[in-house]
Length: 95
Figure 1 (cartoon, rainbow, N blue to C red):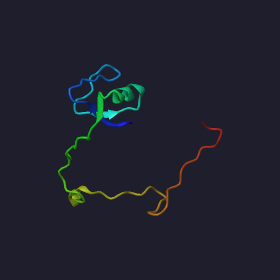
Figure 2: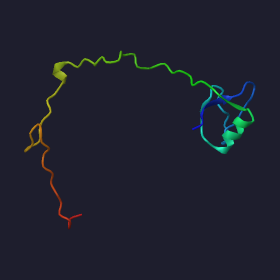
Figure 3: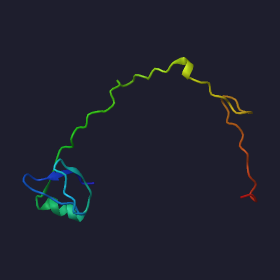
Figure 4: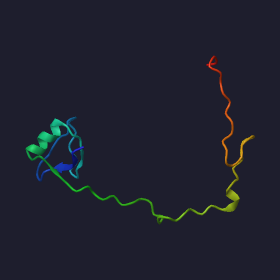
């Protein structure tokens, strides 16, 4: 990627596929086409727009889950809390 680029003031620039380059800018791929647009001044570096966070919860705050909705994790037969249960193994002849 070459960075975040937008069309120069008063310019309309098409992308390689013919779609118009967004006026607000976009991440530019590192291609000969884009490098030519930069060299002739049609595309210029721009500041990436700041996107507001959609999450309204404060950081570090855990969601409240009622105790009656939590459940205990059941261990499989032959396993304790600290060891992995044994796996069934196939012989090399079975597929």
